[in-house]
Length: 198
Image (cartoon, rainbow, N blue to C red; front, side):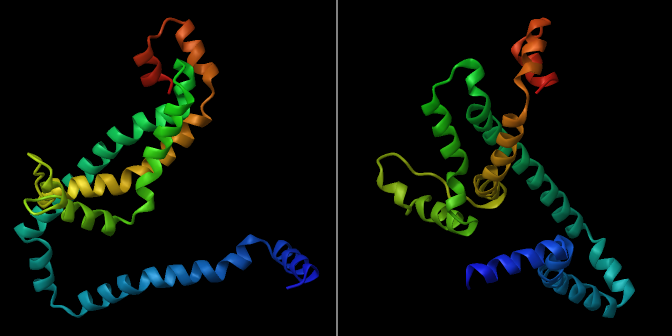
């Protein structure tokens, strides 16, 4: 494309407004997400209502829902326990004079897992652990395989904490340090400032 054509296309998009030219890609994404949901609703509508109620309200379904909610809560807690200190080191460490090398290392540790998709990370953990894993060759180091609740917790935490890190780092970097200084000058300790101001 020539420069004139690019300028003309950019001008046309500007005049059309963002809502019009984004409608097509947004519509395609919504349609792609809605297809499985619509299929599920149509299949459920074909079922006998009594059978459907029995399937939804059976004890196994309740137990699976409780386990899923427990896993989600545990992943949020574990990801926060990893991401929050790293985000604080990356964004707010200048207030306590942490060297810039530590800040860069915290940022790298916070975003490094984004380089691997979750399924690759899970496969690597399976290959490295257990009695025949890669780490078993080291004397005295046999890590259990990540299976069950605890395995899912480890894999999901390692795969999701970078997203929380990025959000926390942005939020902490955007805070005005004057509020923290004012709180400290009014007599609040470091933990009180972190809890009440930050």
